[in-house]
Image (cartoon, rainbow, N blue to C red; front, side, top):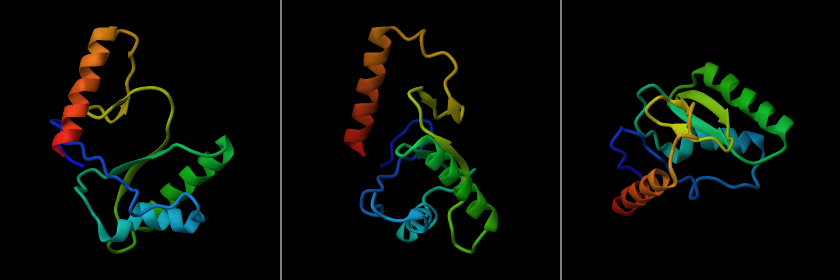
Length: 121
C-alpha cells in the first residue's frame, strides 16, 4: 500500500503473517516477507501490537538481535516499537510529541486525507 506524500510505505502483512506462528516464524515474516523487500532506505519500522507486555519486549529484543545478524537478502529493521495509543509521526520517525493540540476538525480532516490515500493505493 503506497501513496504517502512523505514517502512512507505501509505493507499489508495479511498474506504473509499468521497470528498462530511461533516466534521464529514471526521473525522470518518480518525479515523475509516472502521475498518482498520494499523501499529499504533507512530501514523498516516494526510495530508490535499484541501480546503481554513482557512477551512484546522479549520479541522486540529478538527482532533487533536478528537485525544485527545481517543475513544476506533480509530486510533491514531500523526500529522495533511496542505500539501504544499515541500518534506516530512518519515524517519524524517517532511518536508525535504534542497530539493534544489537534482540534476535532483537524483530526477529522487528517482521517479523511488518509482514507483518500488508501483508496488510491
